Image (cartoon, rainbow, N blue to C red; front, side, top):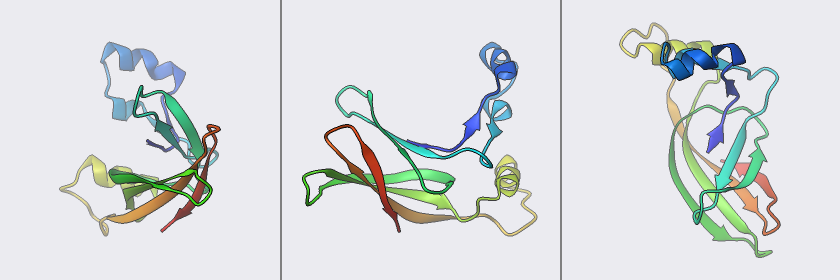
Length: 131
């Protein structure tokens, strides 16, 4: 799972639980001072196995594909393909997605990108590249 730095402030949790507001209205973007991560869970029991920090912020529309390869050192190379937004301008992204029928500026599109991660048997994962 790609995890951008969206958070629900403690003061808004009750509104979320009570249903008096939507999840989208609760989230706040903290991209200026936070990092983005990829969390990888086990297929067997869905427990968290790896949490890898990304070198830069990303915003995605969909996860498209994922597959594994065996690395030369015996580690697993995980390749994830995502439809990544071609702009990280949060205000423009949120404006566009709030009303797809009334986009005034050039639309923000998504590009197919592949992220690669090395997953060691010791539970340590690392970012390899993005292409």
